[in-house]
Length: 425
Ligand code: PMP
Image (cartoon, rainbow, N blue to C red):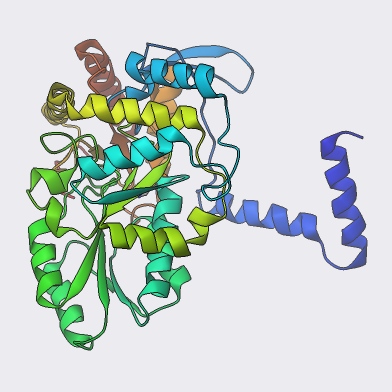
């Protein structure tokens, strides 16, 4: 029997005995569908050296050329020759998998070298790799509560799902402060016992609105109340600061953030996550975090690719300048056409649509009729009434591509009769 048939038999056999498993699975999908949250993935084949162009396979098997406008490979490093060569060379030299967890034969040379490079980048004593940024946040934030008994975590209301998961998993006391609201954070800090260990967990660039936290202000409060700071720079690393170490570098506060958490999967263009901190913090997390200890380490080709990418990013500030220029140009072009760009301080260009039906409709028509691929961002990722399209232009997005996308948006906003007023996030 084929795999599908086997599953059906297994499900129906159990069904007769106790519980309608199949219906439960179907109902759970139906619930997502009825809430307008059912996801359909675009099947894309990226073409080597052609980013942001790709080939999409439609459901009927036919193919269509598209331009990707929602990639988090912000600088196109996932296609950069320096990164590709490093990955290929590493496969040729050492093979495919790491062969084990870090403790059991899986500590590869390129992982060790990458951790040293990352620590240096963030001006920290040490760094620690994880399978992904998600795992890095979840493992570290939960483990800090084991290491620091009674830890009280203060978390920004818009923190990423992986931070929330880690904080909840730790099981300790936690307080949510209103997004980027330092007065609220201070009120919560002031109300907590003075002697208790505390952690303020926040992000630099928030990826859905594109706003940037007040790092210096948050650090000052944390210091005033004796709290440690944990900063997710997933959407900033590679993109801000003189060498690309993130907003903490740009703002001159690298030495004042206790733990910096990043991904290797966005501007660095590969996959994986890491934290950078004092050696004693890294040593403790390394020793206690299940999400680090009990999993096979990253393949050497990934860590070698990431290492080449980081070294390249450190010494190529022009990539960051081009990236900022492209984002500013797209914002200005949309605004000139009356397309409501939300008030973003960063490279992220969110366009306000304001309801889920039009948001999905415009996104579908952009893809089907114009070959413009941008995902709709709907509730619960963003609040109801703020549904949006989130554009992420890279240095590889040309003026012609921008002409095309502005024209397409102009026509579709008219077609769907969506308001064109300017909107502040
Ligand atoms: N933090 C933030 C703020 C994110 O947006 C994401 C992913 N979108 C992550 C962490 C997780 O990173 P990764 O994709 O490497 O798992």
